[in-house]
Each structure stands twice: as C-alpha cells, then as structure tokens.
Image (tube, rainbow, N blue to C red; front, side):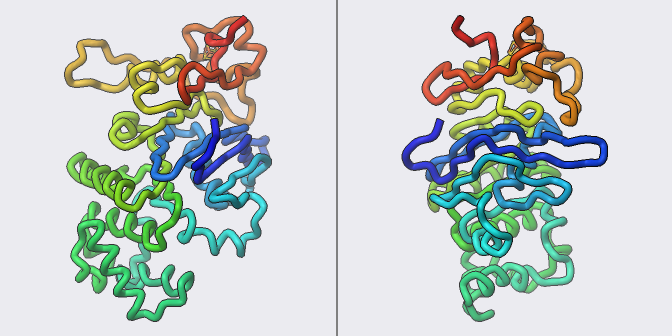
Length: 322
Ligand code: SF4
C-alpha cells in the first residue's frame, strides 16, 4: 500500500484506552499512506476510530489512552519514537490540525492576531511585528481581511472563525494537515466555501491532507483517496472513484446507499444494528453481526486486506481466493 513519494506512512497502528471496565481498542492495526499533495478522506460512523487516528498522528492521545503499537512515519521520522518535547517542535511546523468546532480552538480572551502570532514566535523566533506581517498574508490567503487581527473570536462569524483556524494550521507550511470534521456546524454555503478553500490550498501549496468526516458526500468533493473505517479497523481503502463507483466492502456499500442523491431513484436504506463495543469486539470480522453476506468464516477469522484493484484494498472474506 505504501511507496515512493509518501509523506506519511502508518503501519499497524494501535491506539488503546485502558479503562477500568476494559481495554478499548479504538484503532487496531491500521495501515495507510499519504503522498505529497494527496488528500486522504477517512470516513465512517461516529465512534469508528477516525478522530482517534487523527489525534494519534499528532501524538495527542489523552490518558488513559496511548499508542499501543505500530509506527507513524512522517517525512522519514517515526513520531511514535519521539518525546513530548520533540513532538511539540513537529506540531504546527510539520503536521498540524484543523480541529472540529473553531470556537473551541480559538482563545476568547486574545485577539486573532495575538493567537496566530504565537506559533511563529515560538517556532521561528519572529518578533511580534514580523509575525503579524506573516499572519496578515495568511489571512488574505484564506479570503479574510487582515484587519481582523485586531478582533476577538466572538466578533467573527462561524465561517470566518473556521477560516482563521485553517490559516493557523497552514502558517508554518506543514507537510501534512489533518482536518477533523472541519465543516461541522457550518451551513451548506459556508461548507462549500471551506471545501473550495482547502482544494485551492492543496493545489497551490502542495500540502498533503487527511480529511476526517462522517459525511461521504463531502469526502467525494475533496479526496483523491478514501479509507473507510469500521470499529477501529480499515474496511476498505482505494482511489475515490473506485470507492464511490465500485465499492467492494458490504459496509462501504451500506454507507453509500444511505446517502440521499438528487437524481437517483434508488431507495435510501440504512445499515441495521450498531457498531460493536470496542472493549469486546466480535472475533473474526467486526462487521459480521450487521453484514447481509456474513459467512461462517467471518465469525471465526479476521479478514486481512485483499487487493481488488489498482491501490484498492478490501478487508472482506467475499474477496478471498480459495
Ligand atoms: Fe461481511 Fe464477512 Fe465480508 Fe465481514 S468478511 S464484511 S462479515 S462478508
């Protein structure tokens, strides 16, 4: 699945939460890669592990969670081997995150200019004046008037705040930006503007991105490649067109059938049941209690990724050659 030109290579990553009631295997043996200027969309239902995976890539898993195994190689460095101090130097400069809900990210008591200058002063040693010049340019790049450096977050609209958060994530020109549900809580017009902005940034800056969302229709707008997660594992990964027009995993097929389409006469359906408790996931395929095609082997043995097309892999026994 990996190859030359990879900015990020994740191998067999495990993120477990050690709770009093058991070990929650939130991300379990996940492998994926992202190339330069590529957007990888990560999709799945709430609780499938997609946000945990994003936080793990930045070394931001809060206790009682921790990375229990595997590697995260960013631009040649395995982030799982770094100390907290070393990780702090890499955050913002090599990998940054556009967090869910801009209001929770921006500090209400500081002006936009003050909080945006901080990473430049800390990481680059800029003076306040030099930092503010860079901030002004960054704000222009995301379509905002640089005058807002003097404003406080509560004086901005939701869309403006989200643009500020995007500008912050790009300030130090990181290799990889992780966008975690960046358009949640925004209306559809602003959503479209933010998606177009991210596309423009990808083209102009050649930034690699991981776009995490439960909304497959948004992913189809921006992603070059899609990984579908279910219960902490990758069910299917492949080029966007393959995933949207030729999905091979029963879970991906179920997700796509649950999206309303304007021109389609196909009935909208949903996937019955709920995802498993990740303290006690089912043995074998984690999707079998909900899968319409479940076979005996699915209950017993876990399916490993099988190549079904160019860069297209699916973890499902239906595709195993006997
Ligand atoms: Fe369904 Fe079996 Fe494939 Fe799992 S491995 S998705 S249960 S057919």
